Length: 315
Image 1 (tube, rainbow, N blue to C red):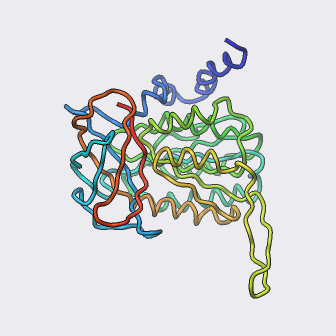
Image 2: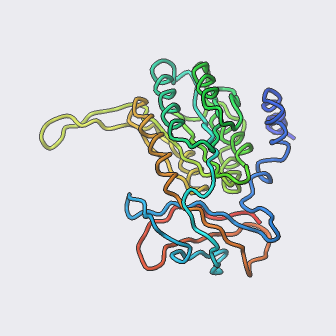
Image 3: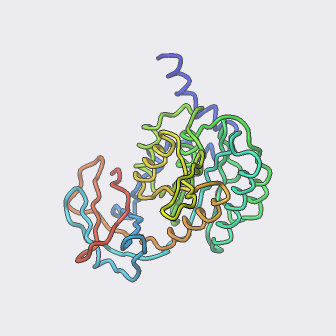
């Protein structure tokens, strides 16, 4: 084993040694096995969290019979399709590296406050922050006031371990009887993680969580409009959103882009509002007993709706 490989192998132990006993217990099963898409209840039940839109507008009022779902190419019978049928488990995964110091941190705090105000009484939230280290500030809890206090005490400094933070957050997202949502914010490229992007993406594909990324432009340039006035054009550094795009696609989420951090509250609010319009579909797989990766294909019958859902699950 190379020195770097040895350090990577030790990373979970080093990271989680500074987390609470709760976190260590959760992580004692790796993200690959803890974050399964299926759970046992006599037979396997698969849950699919799906966003259905007509262009940009969510489509409401659909029932199980309106969907066609294929599991490894075999049409399945959908048992239920409901909106907000389970409480939400929201995990904030927030960049607190040195680049977000000052007003950026204040804007991020405002965004957290706004999304917490939109949660229901039976929802829970957790706070993970990352710079060159990853910290579980609060586990999943309903005491949103305590989460706000932890957010206000976070300081911006250091590098950006984005990959590590997402991997660690996936490990605490597998919660039964809830809909796990990761809201991941970063304003730059990863420069400190032990985990490779491919490893984290594989873990995301096997997780039950939906990931929404929020990225902020690194800079803004201006061009002249047809009327002669200036138009702001947000600029993203090369590869800035590649990782967020990959993990969002792997889980059926998406990435929102903000021109600047003062737009973060609006972006966070859009994430929650959109997530509330997603359908939760369940089915019992039939005639597809082969272990391994199962590809899911989901569409709405008889109309050209856009459907965003995870591409599969591990059996």
